Amino acid sequence: MEKITNTQKKRESAITEIVGVSAEIEHELLENIKRIFDAQPLYKYERPKTSEEKLLIADLNGRMQEFVRRFGGSPISLISDHIHFFDEEKMTLEIKEKLKDSGGFFSNDSQEIWILPWPKNLLRRAQNIAHEMIHFNSWNSYIKSLDKATVKTGGFTVSIKGNKERIFETVDEGIVATLVKLFDQEFFRDISVLKSQVQERQDIIEAVKQQNPETDYSDVGYAQIKRLESGEDEADLQWYPQSDDRKYISILVEEIYEKNKLQFSSPREVFDIFARTIFTGDFKPVAQLIEKTFGSGAFKRIAEETKKVFKTSEI
Ligand SMILES: [Zn+2]
Image (cartoon, rainbow, N blue to C red; front, top):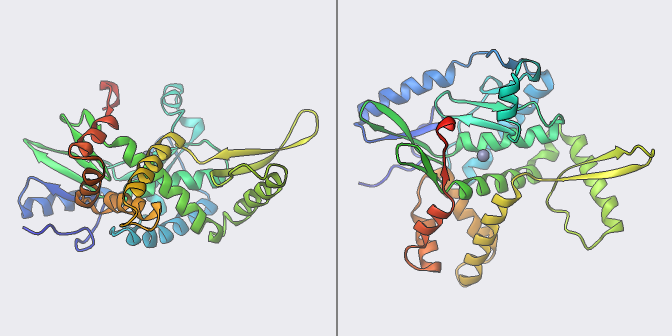
């Protein structure tokens, strides 16, 4: 049977399909998930959003719809209620410690995004929101087995061993983090509440470039002028997050491009095949390309190499 593509299906939540059930049961379960998607409570650890943040979310959502469609995905419209901001004052020490290295997360089960109170500035926070919005808009599927439905795929990742392991985790995170950078560089300058910070970042990069023209500044995600104790001003450049995950993808993409130059005109064309996979759930084009380039079994090898194994406490 021909697979119904993401663009043909009407999408009403982060979940695009439920595997292993009849069409009627799938419809019923998707209806339930839609109810969770629609009912977004204000939680104990959450703070209300400022009007500036609400404006930011509306702008990000509008641009994200266009961005997701470009890669063959079917976007879901998110309103500010779907994005929950942790209130630092109300977080326990234990929660703070557990989430200290995270910028945010997305939950399929509760159909919501959570954003951590750090970093403080709006530009970095916008990058974190865009990151989670891409996960939300990815091809997220459930599989029904025995009495419960569990996550089967989330973008490029596939859950195995009863959801205790997730293969392709680094691949998925690398693609998403790269997409955030592309999204920022294309759209952030047009988002009214981000304009001045994006301009400031550009101005600081230009100034630093004059002193060190050899350095590559394309990875600078945030820049500010810091006043030192001595009273002098110093440029503080911060990179886009997840450089290791992005590097994994860029090396893979570059190798594939080098070996298939007759087929592709740029590495970006290869990257787009990876990006389409997370939004369409169709692994065939990327799997074929990897096997053709590196030999049979290569796709499986990459799956293993980029696997995440969860500790019991994380499940
Ligand atoms: Zn992520």
